[in-house]
Image (cartoon, rainbow, N blue to C red):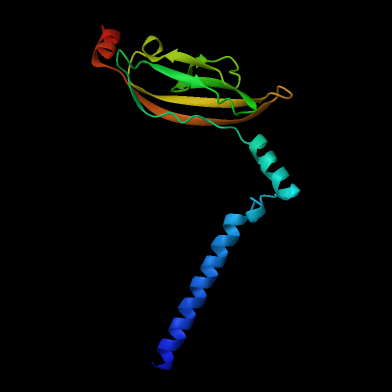
Amino acid sequence: MSGHNKFTRIGTGMAALLLLLGTVTLTGCGTGGRNGSTSTSVATAQGEAEAAYAIYPRFKDQKVTEQNHTLTLSNSKKNNYAFMYTLTVAGENLYESRKIQPGEEETWDISANCKESCALSITITAWSLENGKEQNSLTQIIQLTLPKQNQTAKSE
């Protein structure tokens, strides 16, 4: 075996060992390793992170049909925030929900509120349950495609 091949094997072996050690270290991080104990600072940091972030629903583009004509505006029961939804098209407010509490939802009838296909802007604002103060918000834009008869009915 040449000296070059021997060094290549040793280098490859060391790289594999380092990768394995790094994987084991990262997997045990925050879980306390094998004995299940977790350090207080890690547990506190995780608890604060859970309280600090809201779980926002993700909306997808929607083709409106007779059976599929509503948007469900929901709030995960795991959230520590109330959600308020504001739905707008081209800067015009179409709907503003009440503050939806964790575990609750309401529906919005697209066909009753939109007469043509459009880009719908959905803004979800989080409100603290502890003090009622407005927190951060998230805006999503989806494309609503309405059936042709709704579009032609508006132009008549």
